[in-house]
Image (cartoon, rainbow, N blue to C red; front, side, top):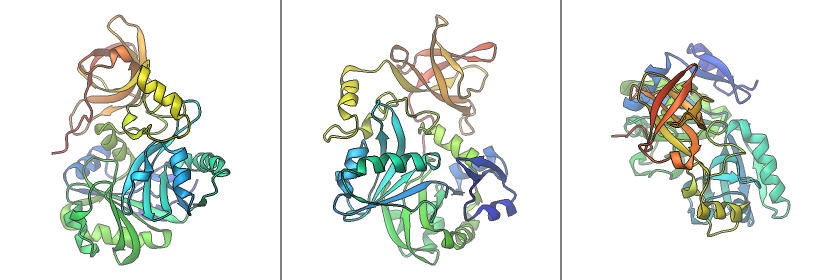
Length: 362
């Protein structure tokens, strides 16, 4: 297993460590519900340095990105980021990612930890004919997610940049926690606001310590991957390997909004046809209306007891106090308000399809 530059720090803080995407990662410190509530109400910091980073540069950089990604990267200006995915040739998804325009002819692609090698090989295959400059800098950089409603107020003392002026999915390259040339990005996968901080491995311990110090009067706590999962699920955000994968299309997954047919990209014609003609299954959010907790893999049934799909993500929502989940169902059962059933062991438990997100950030 690989370690992040902060692995020893997590162990000293008493984190429960688990293998995740080939890394030794903190799954929790005090407990999932405590950490989840800390992010929703106050402020938390996650070590997500296992994520992958590719630098794509040169006059052909945009051509390559436009070919392999579903969203329209031509609309990016310097200092702006974009959520996108890498479609495969069969209509599925190689990975979802965030694309940052660092400067003219230079982009940063942030990919999922479990897919670093797969994504690199996939993009490299298309780059053979395009010739952009590519660097895999995943092992050189660390990533911290500082998430929660107190983030701007707590972190302002660490940077000369006006944090309140950084809009969602925008970023600044600036000094932060005494380190020059740090990416301060108003992104994150929790739905509670905050920032993601990209810096070199050699710098992250200093950043971590100063973030915890700056946030101590605002209730900051280190947060593990378990709470990261419950937070993202309450927002209805997809997790690669659960809700999206090589066999699910962006149209089926409700990601048509990041699939732009004003350009040509991998498998764009087939996906365009899907969007026009419709799909046989859709990813939906649902809430349990009885007692029960949905889990990945549970069968979903209709009122006639026919299997119409499967749960892809599920949990007991700490914020809402009820079972929530995502799953693919046949399109005729995907309408908001539809009653469905989950096969939880030997019991059939009622649920209803709801509009996402589950959690409304006030």
